[in-house]
Image (cartoon, rainbow, N blue to C red):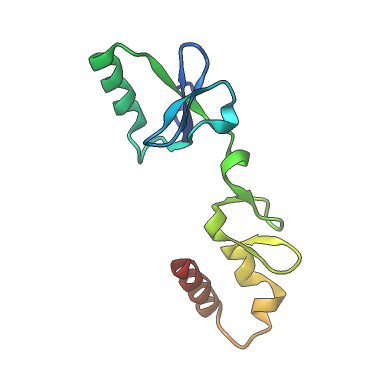
Length: 126
């Protein structure tokens, strides 16, 4: 993998095909959009690929995924946020910080910490 800071990756074989499918029916596809997206650190991709290379002799590589493909963009601050950390206020998609500062939330007689706590508790219900 060329970019060590990339967090989300797809696995590609030496033929340029991407690991796709699910646990019971997996294979390789030429279409990157069908490739399974892994969290590079959480799924220990480097370690897993090395183990496959050593035990099976199969060379696979982790290919960084463009963040625009896996994250939402806050319409106000333009930062990336996870799908569960993005809210639609009726007009725009907002991250938690921008949601807490939106006129809808700030017009209510609550502190910002209460608004943030309520937004976070909404996430835990999902």
